[in-house]
Amino acid sequence: MTTFLKKLGIFLAGLALLASALQLAADRGLAKSALCREWEDLFSSRINADLLIQGSSRAWVQFSPKVLDRALGLNSYNLGVDGHNFLMQYYRFRLYEKYNQKPRYLIQNIDMLTLEKRKDLYALEQFLPYLDRPLVHEAVSHYQGFEPIDFLVPAAKYRHSKTAAIFGLKECLFPTPSTKYKGFEAQDKEWDDAFLRYYASHPGGVRVQVDPATRVLFDVFLSRCAARGIKVILVYAPEYIEAQGFIVNRAEVLAIFREFSRRYRIPLLDYSHSFISYDTRYFYNSQHLNARGVDQFNTLLARDLAPLVR
Picture 1 (tube, rainbow, N blue to C red):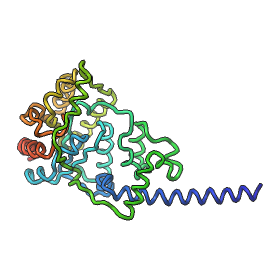
Picture 2: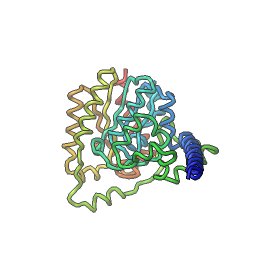
Picture 3: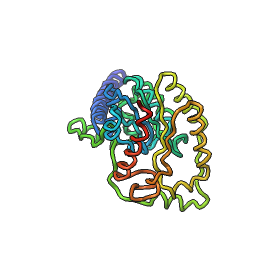
């Protein structure tokens, strides 16, 4: 029995060692990949922006650091995180604070989904290399995705995405360069009315579910920025006009942001009724601008930001 247990122990130890080695290689590969480029810039203290841009995919694909840097004479960086509401955006901001110098200005993109709270951990693959970092651990714990075993057992976290494990191992040897520029990537696409078809299937409209805890957190965020001397500028990027009417409590949600703007005496630039919002040539769906729309929007944005960042 003793011999059996000894052999079993050696086998399990060897298995754990192999799993740890594979996890390390996969983690390093993912961290090198385009998937985690912005996280790596953040953790490696390579950002240190004068102007930080935050939001969801509506930040990531719509705010061009290249245009803003050139027009404003600042060093900007786009930290937009695809598919996530403000809760994850806030954790990313806190991680930015920990590893990078304080920005002078912060653009917070706002929209109808900013104050909602999704249940699932969208695109969880991007978090896999960083689960040992306390703030990342805390952030992902707010979502359905990872479980305690994923933080304790070597390589267990990759059971959620075997594809990510294989991709990470490949990227460890043959990394693929990122196509983003300072976190931003324009989408060279034409109009697709999928969003409108979705809304059309809900003839009574769609009601935004503002999450009370996220609303409080947004307040905490603005207070934190004010205390640290970070000038926040709220921006509502263009949104296709016909989609706006499907949100039955749109005015109510906008009123929340206007109240934050008033209370903290911060600008709110609303482009939801700009000329861009009336023309599908500038969008690839009702929520996201294509490359043509990005050029138009950032020209307007740079003009309006100029007197605010002096």
